[in-house]
Length: 360
Image (tube, rainbow, N blue to C red; front, side):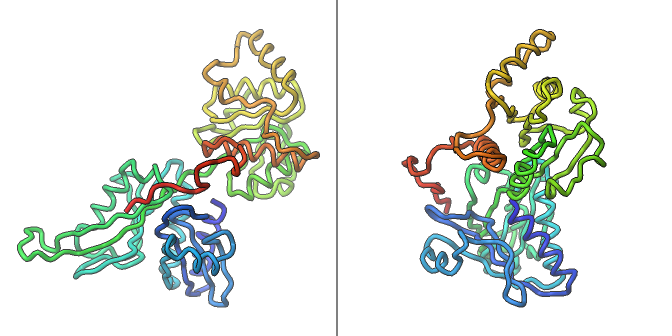
């Protein structure tokens, strides 16, 4: 996600600089590939780049996997770079999953231009970029973007043959191929606490492109935001009022790590009534069990329906020592939960790392 946001920002900056750029986009994959449909890279006029199409070895990846990966190269003028940057940023900022569809091949009179895109949130919410021609291609693509098949894959391609004339009398068709990319909402992380061990958690999570909020019981003026990278820092003087400063949702992970027992107890109580998909509590298991007992004694037991979302002690067992190792353990567990992975060794996975069916 951080790559994609950097791409969007660079396209807008290129427009502001008045500089043409080349955009390289993965539009089709087959078999095991490092990146899926929608991976992008911007090439500036001086040859420097932003983003990755592969694991960092672009030339070798393209040569060795030419049969597995198709890449669309587009020269983007100042105006078109800015418009596309805004469209990508809009997709990344959306609170719901959405789809970007890109024309990668086109033939026939009145066909869309290669590189034309449409961002589809719903049938009534579609934002297009580029020339979609004068046939019914856009409507057909929007309808398919709403199908469940896009969400089941890392990306798919569909071919269309659209009659040039509505009555079909002359038998002429416009042929296009479209790549569909699913854009998921950013993972949001709410860290309840602002101690020194929060710093590496916030920095690592923001490096992944996640939206991080650090919740402090003190006024923000006492907590320099720059300590936490690009994370947002908010004040919550009374931890039982947590819902006033964060709005947990289906892509939200919450971490309780203030090191103050009563404050953490209130945080856990507030989060138990929210909709966070992940609640992690720092500290030994016995401490969390005591907190659960105290909540029950208050007459506010932790809901059974939320038990599978509670991770305590927090983190994966990856070893190491110190705040940085703990941060790695926490962020790795959140990533595994959010992406529905086990957190096990990839070497023990009998299936391919990235493999999935090819959708022709």
